[in-house]
View 1 (cartoon, rainbow, N blue to C red):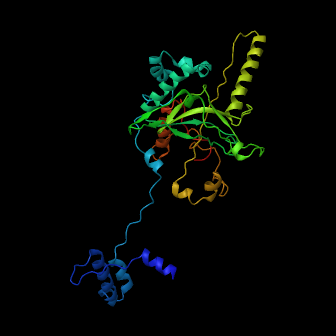
View 2: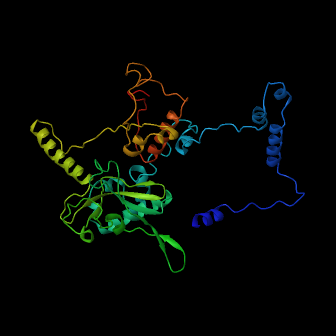
View 3: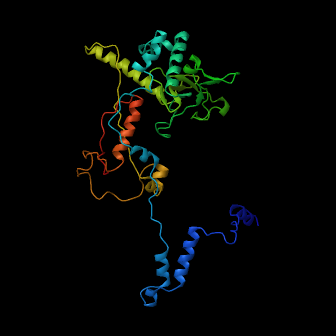
Length: 354
């Protein structure tokens, strides 16, 4: 009874049409098709057709349309007139961009290259004000201390963490204003309950401390200013993936400098660089939703090996053509990377068959 009642609400009876009112074109076409199906045509009487065939001829079949493509692919297929570099680094607070906002306060981007400003309350307040003005000009209304918790390099590969906080302050007069102080910049929310702690502490006592990482510049994505941060316990133990990286880089610099000085090479420090390569696997949306292995584990578990190996020219050195959305997608990614100061240099196909 309940199901019938729900069905009655979901499908109310059609409104009766007054007598003599004109029929809709669709109903008229359907009735004409049914009448022609019941009345045998001349071809049917001659044995060349039948009522069913006549009905099929009378009712127009809608054309088959492919499902809409992914919005990302649609956006990527928009033409790009080459790499646009006038916005390079606009959404990252460093270099010339940082200088334009720090110089009115008597500071430069070189002042941010050391840790001294984080211990000077007055200087940190000036940096926070300049950073707020830059973020607002970039369209940001919120900020977040952005870090990589333990497991981001393996268990939760690539997953970062943050809490987004609005920079808007709502006064009694009803007019919002932007506020971002040195305290907001230097430290973040102290909560480590969601991350590995060995089960040694209760949830409400699993504290973690966020501190700004002055060696990594803030950047803006959308309406959020992301502030790179380190996540540690109250004992100083690392609860993230970046803190061990910084400690390793510092140890490498100390011992490498010591070794080079013993070999007769005078230096005061070593800066470690890494070259990044981002591989992209593009799969059509309709094909992706037919592959449970891609949906659940993000890799191929079923299927057959390629018809041939890696000996043909349509792999690594093949030209990037506009026959597919691949080149346009790479151009769109490159444009977004330029905005946050990522210096991409090379575009190419991969060795795997594609």
